[in-house]
Length: 255
Image 1 (spheres, rainbow, N blue to C red):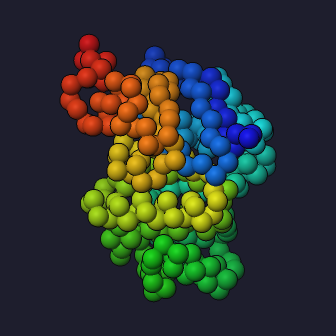
Image 2: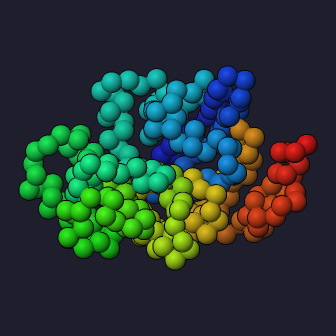
Image 3: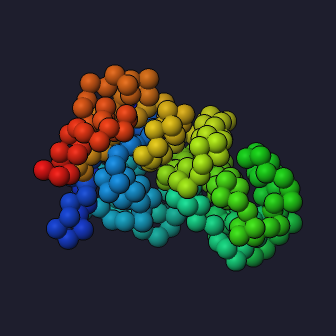
């Protein structure tokens, strides 16, 4: 089976700080991959490089065999049209009503097609468990959990083939976080989409993932099915998964 996304030799440094040092990773069509790793391990940087928001220093990112690195203009826009993205914190536009937030990518932020876009937003909001009335509210009028649902609705509104989730449960209590995890899993399956999630929340990883990869010191140091998380045989993964203070991750930071 051809990889949906294939990353090879991805490197990125900011000045003297080397964030990614030769990342190799592949994602199969329809697979939900979760990338775990500590704060500052480079997870968000890798995601932004895939999205074309940051330029890598070296390496290749293939989408269905097409090179993404170096794309510009219309070619980059065409590639991005395959993507849906749930940003950390939601990243909703406070000045726009919820329905305009949900349909923002479809309209490129331009006004117009109001009736059709409003109806679409109501339909998609229902898919994430929100009532029609929410469409006309402003983000500031919503709870944190509702804002996350709106952000998820925006990510899936265009029926994207590939979904990206950046720390989707940050700032939520365990119950609301579990609800968001369940919705992500449900929508990824319903769309038949390929998904990449970055998180340090192991409850999210266990709920969302088909497969898990750990990013540490700029490289993927382990990957395997989510069922193997507790028997990885990798001391870094074992320490991270169980949240232990003592272990090689601590040694790497303080030594």
